[in-house]
Image 1 (cartoon, rainbow, N blue to C red):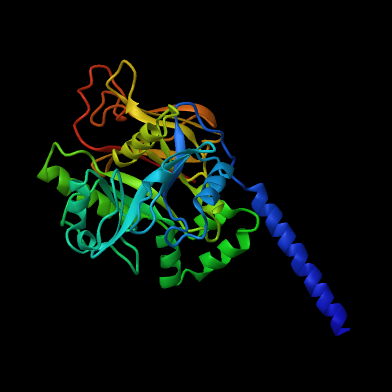
Image 2: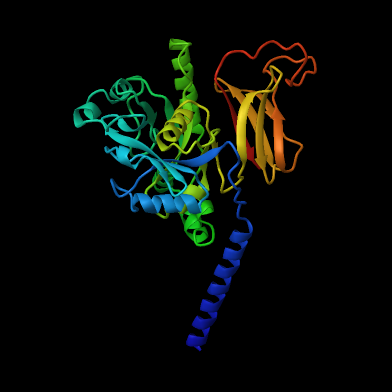
Length: 368
């Protein structure tokens, strides 16, 4: 009798697991092919050169399987310039993650990794002196936050980080997210990774504060960039991290590995990239720019579904326009106009508008 009861319970558990897996697979986000004139990839990846679980070849294979065209490798305190270039259809961009006295700092455009004395001295200025661009890695991490605000120049900041999401789930009682991620992982690795993510409100607020202060100090300074960090170490898998979200840059490859790597790095730290949560609402062909033949701003993208999407245009961290597209899918153009009064009263494009006020613009999109 006990044996029959145990077998019945086991059968019920298996049936429930199969049903749950089918439900998860049915909700998988579509996998879009790369858009012409756009490369998508992963920022902040580790290999066996530091604390990653996979070799560079394994990372490249995972990127290909996830539909990425580039990976920015940032192993701790090493820089393997010889690895840079195209490998089996994936562009490897050589970077480094410096373990500094203030926290972790990722960098691209360097001829070499920082020396120990540079990491323990003035790391941000050392990166700039070497011609590189510094990106603050997981700056609000609960165990490894960045503490060197105001100590030197930097070009970008990670506002989303898989490592931060995992650490926050463990530190702040997010065990329900960990349990859900473990249950979902066999059926959809990307959704499992995103299940650990809570929000990035604190990171965006800190970014906007720092960006406003930098702009006030030097109005001619280049804009600071927002990046989403895979911080991929191969656990639970590189592919899951790569399918969860990616960085999209508006570039067409030339086939010259060195030139393409430089162009990708410059686009990422120059504020010309978009972070897309591919595991939830994939899009391609992302472009925010002045409208052709107009002073208005517009966002171009292509998506299989836009029915639950909302878009907000921000200038210097403040929302100045919001849009809900009428299109349900396919290629779409979201017009924002120049922020400010409009004769129509809706903030949209209007004849005779003044030029868009100077500032740092971005679009934030939310799904449902």
